[in-house]
Image (tube, rainbow, N blue to C red; front, side):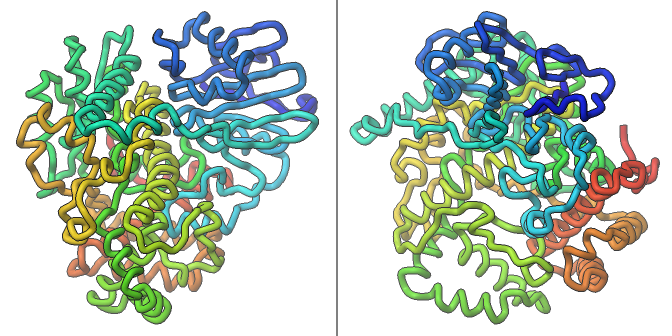
Length: 605
């Protein structure tokens, strides 16, 4: 469903697209879920499951939506702080408009200007009367990271409503602010509880979140990767649900690190019907339609996985699919690198790291320098988002990453402080919400698949946030330095005895995507590079653009390059492709050129 509306009375100044019906000032191509009480009108898109503090399941029936509006009329925006779901909610009261986006941003994305709002980037760019001027700083940030800052779209004057934020229009002014209050339900009591008691609470909350999501559903499925997160979803589901379950997974052709065997073990153990797709690399042809749907420039190594698994699941028309996304970030990541950063800050090594970064940090002339730069950057900048794209020296526009991502970070010699600093500044708001969940939800939306995320239910989220660091990551400082810490400790403790030993005892492989698989065809690569070099936008973004692009092409052909730097090179190429395609689709408004980039024989059904 697509919708749009106006913040002022200038409706007559716009040409309304065909096929849209006016629902009391909101234009939609399908009838939205809505209710009215007195002068209040509420519209809802997405899925809702529970109002925290109320026992009953809540869905999208007329009475349920009325309950949401009654709760809002009683306690205001706090109603959405206690509403668990994946949603966008719009409330019109007289001349005021409010739009609420769920706290993790897995409901529909809303774009807006000073005059218009819509869940479609295509619609809002077509209705916008001003010229579409690229946001060069944000697009430079994209070339470095593969994503934009939360709230930005890549076009000056067009913004995205951030997760956990509400937009208010009133008195001819548009403003946004967070409506999220810290979860305080458990924070005063967890410190006095044993690990066993906390594990039982965690297990119960996780099961409850799944129960609310599958309530009344007949066709239930889940995404399965062969690890603790998706395995935990399946084990918890089977603790109370005996119906048929479909499991969905993706693997890569000729990949020696495939986790398919573990997916099969879990599917057999818990009686789930496995659906499997193997990526062969030709799927790169789908990139234009992905970018067209997302609207903003976006690229992440797992993007094709999400696209293809949703495309596969859509054929089964499931009522609900459970995803394990976000649990790594909720508990926290990169404990070994944080321990090394703690050591560097404690011993003064950080000064040497900074000097190395300043003098040799952009050099890629040898394998040794590549490795030194890769690891030094990962440790030195551990409280910043990971970047797999271009370095600052490749870009024409200066970037202040700390300000652009609104990072609240500082110097510390405490492992615990650094761990929580990364978790609260990077892992949750950037990696989980702005990248992983955003990517997964947009691909699900593309195929109308009801994907949901039990680990990011409001109750599980608040509970894990209230835990002491020692229950998120187990092991002392020296254990972390040696890579012997136990990540997601309480989660693993909870599901250790509920999953097969072949899953719980195996060494984690990392789940990386072999990006080289998408660029095995040299003839197609030549076409891709010619397409990239023809982009006026990239010429403005990159220093010495032709030389930079040619150097990337040469580096990619060197098969002796260290694997992780190969991943860097291929990520850079993906970023360039995404920008060039996005430019054709939205700035030049010439989608045919972007879509025709790929010949028919490279496309798959």
